[in-house]
Length: 130
View 1: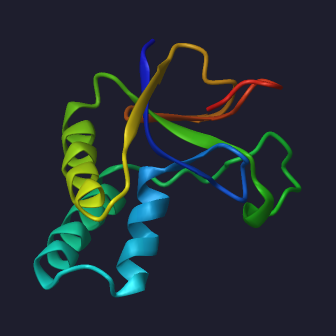
View 2 (view 1 turned 30 degrees about the vertical axis):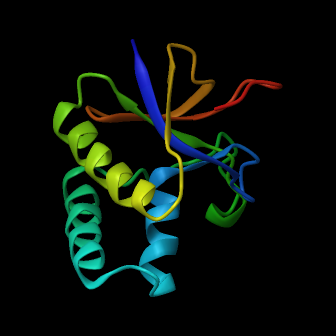
């Protein structure tokens, strides 16, 4: 199964992996650095993602790990077309604010800790980037 992950080159301090697009989107929304139009559009897109794509209840293999210390990263399933379309729109806004966005692809995301119709959350295999 082909999986996609929208990232920027900055590292996520929680995972050590390239930062996911939605993590950056939340940071931008809190920063007040967006134009009024970009803020409105980014909020609309993020809200759609929050309401349409399930929020995983589990993000790590160890059950006793708090959510603050998890190491799982989210990958969208290639056939989750509507979510991917929204992520492309989010990426356009992020790029306008100076952040290059890359789209990683894999069929080996790591140790899967959550899967639904839209996404897979996995802890990367040791030594692999997610």
